Length: 292
View 1 (tube, rainbow, N blue to C red):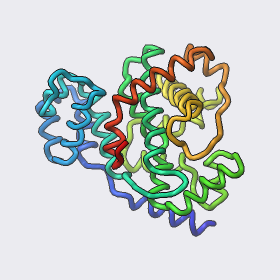
View 2: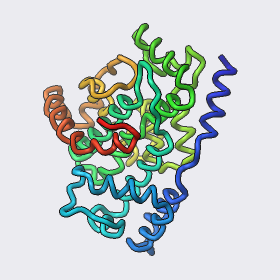
View 3: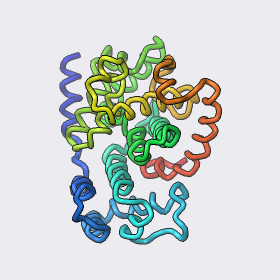
């Protein structure tokens, strides 16, 4: 068991780094001296990444009239921060793309992640949180540990998925029982390696912060990512959209529902909104190396 664990961690550490452009743009987004032309010039250093970002920008999801052919124009519609979220997401999709076959397919796992991303954005709008784009990214990337495990240890991870389904236990526990690190550990390791911003690191570890005592350790503005990610996960699992790798349905916490200003009867409304929105974000799945 220990040998398997160590080998998997080594493989995770050996995954490629993200495009240097992603880190450069992260710094520029927070630099008051940056402008659209400077950011576009940096992004042009990675033509493949630029092409994928523009493909996403021109998808029906963003509905930019007439479309755009260059990054500078895209920024004028979307803003610096949203562009960075797209660059980061596309970079991760490129590194973790996989077509492994088994009980859990990468397509269904990414589909679930896209559902969480879309729901995160909808919930951010619901609670009037202004930075909806980072909530989309948080939902999309909060389970990258699973996606990474599916890439670096596909047979062992599928074994964990089978065990989780057979015994009705969370995938995290099944992973540990089969000698794998849990996906939060893997996700956190990648988030550090790839220098994710703090909100995304918190989203990856959201389960750790659900208890009141743990939430107290977070900065006041960070708790929103815990709540949005947790609620998005609950809702998308309940809707059975995509496949998170196990069949466990988390209990709906009354305190979380109250903080998110959601009632039980709202679930059907949000499901309809999610399905409408994910039809527009189908391009994300295509960029993950799959087609619907």
